Image (cartoon, rainbow, N blue to C red; front, side, top):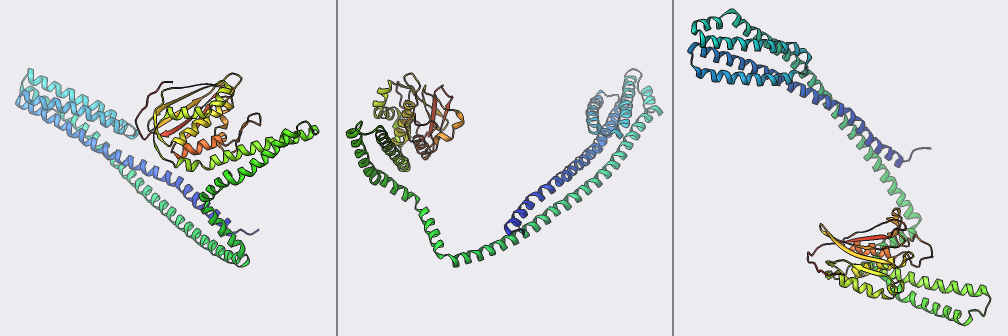
Length: 470
């Protein structure tokens, strides 16, 4: 089976992605080698400079010692002591710099022996200058032993510097090779990318040409289909307007005939209940139940479809307690029937639309009343301020929800229980839509049989706080 142009394009994209990755791994190794060689070059240069520094300080120590021996002035011992201390510090730095180089370690051991010997000989000369005078001290200072110690140190340092230079040449050469390899590899990456990109553009251009030809053939063969596609596209652009139209139809054109059907079915049930056979009574009961559920579903859909319109209402600073009390008043009959206990903490002022907060409170408390456990419902409402948002919570002692349904419960028509609990599966979806249109979020925490706590947040645009106790 021959490959299509689209298949070739997909393969080309994979190659465009994979080839740079492979070359990138090679480039990483090359660049790492370049970095290592550069570090070795820098370390070698630094070691060479440190050797020069140590030797220069040794000469400073020797000069300061000679000046003291010649003059006998104690003021020359200050520079002598300072130069000795600095020599020890720089020698320690030298050890750290060349400790990783095994070739230099024997020379370093020799320096560690020669330099203390030289310092010891200098100290004895200084003591002789103090005790025996210039003649004795100068004879020791100018003796063959004194010159030999410095010559030995000079020889060791020169050998070390020679080896450092050889290493520097070798590492500089390696650095150049790494630079060349890196440049070649980067050039290869560039060439491969350019080539693959050009091939892809060529294949895409070919695909587009084939597609245009196919589109022309399709338009020539089926103009009616094209017209319907355009109408469908235009219909999608008017989705918001269609949604409002649906809300109008649901509230008037659908509700009225449904009420009429419901009235007649209810009349049938009242007049003929028990007068027909049991099967007919069951059919009538199904019809009454279906009409009731359809009416609730249309009402819920209308509420959901108007969520955008509700959320676009007037935003102002509200007393959250007053809105909660209004929601409880709307639910008074259900609260009394369930003998529910509802409490709340201090509730803040919130900057939002009143209908949004009212409807969210009403839906969440209504759900807590609906999905209750065996005992009377206990519902508690609270709110806390977190950074730039207010987080409200509605906690109940109901049947609870498995946390794995965190996303499902907020979907339209998503119900976790069968018909043992009435409802449409739209209430929480409406809450989610209302809260998100206000720039907030909604979630829950729960365990089956342990009750649930639903949280929703609203932006905290106004810092004002209205304090009320429950």
